[in-house]
Length: 481
Image (tube, rainbow, N blue to C red; front, side, top):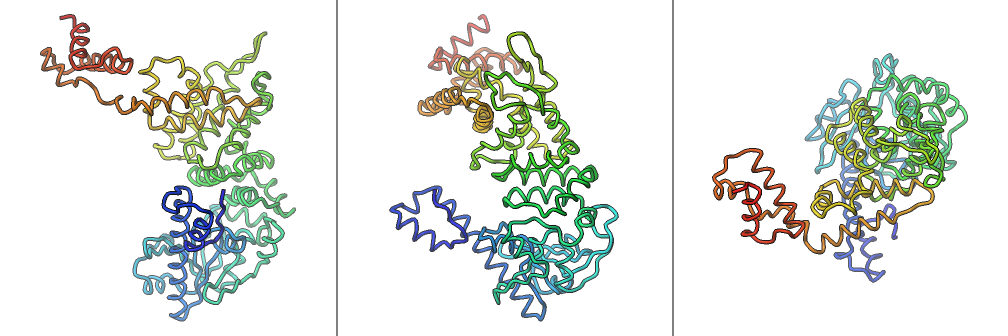
């Protein structure tokens, strides 16, 4: 697989063509190029904003994560800008701005369809709520750097002079792959308790190590996560789960004692035995981590990663050991109910919660699909969440030792066969409608018509009814006239 790091559209096109590939027909490359083109456009726009601010006599730099990513030769996801300009001055210089945190010196600029967070250099005074500063003072770039969380995020970059401003030895820590709080770690954590989770995420996503003082502070202050709102917790956890190093992050949360505070249901899965014949990987917690670890990253979506994460949390409560083997009867249904409560507690959107719980609640039903009647199989195949259900099943199997993908392959073969026969298209092309039934048999709207149409659909899919006249005869027999 070709990897593109900080490359422009022209560079990508040259490489693809030199490889003998057709740029327009190579979907994966086109998608990558599209992302790079958008990223390039965003970077150019960010540079233009910096230029506008500097031309007006203000200092202005790229700040935080984009500088870190640039130095690590990673493509930045967004570009934050730090400046000496005040919110009023930013508002005056840029055409469209939104005061998302004017009292903290933070404005959102919308330029060329991209969003940029622009913050005035500031120093903070007190964090009585463990999240926001009680007061801010507009100040210098250096003082702004030392109020930030980690050294690797305390860097500035001038894209016009191409110079890095480093007041906190962030470049050294990037080179040495170290996560280190700026200043005293305990104080940094007490200012914003979410930094506990951010430390874990950066350490694992970037494959860094903790500075010793940072690690001690994380272990000693882990209980402060109880004061973080559900929305902020779920946002940070989702960022962890969407990253390829998701399993390492969750194991780290458990190791330093944070997981027991935010997701005690997961920690209950530790030391819960499973039938050795199918689960030689170990206990339920180990199985969940391995399922997360083995997920192909191209499948990772918010709903799927959460579904894999929570798919077996009902096992501790359904554990039953008989003479022949261990059973977890009904664990899928219980896991779905528990997942729903967790999603609500973490304030996940209702749409995500619905999909997550559906996937978890049906993940054991997959085993019955090959023996279902054709109509019931198509009911699954037609469902918009069926692909993710199979992705969950794949991860579930990969979370086990020995890995057995025979069922996955069998169902996917069935699915592709149905697709090839265009049966999924005919699934919602009924031979008769409700209006046809009312007209043909003088029926009134009601549950009887619905029952007939459902029976007709099954008969049609099973090839027991193939024409409209056969459908009318089938309905007539059901009605008894």
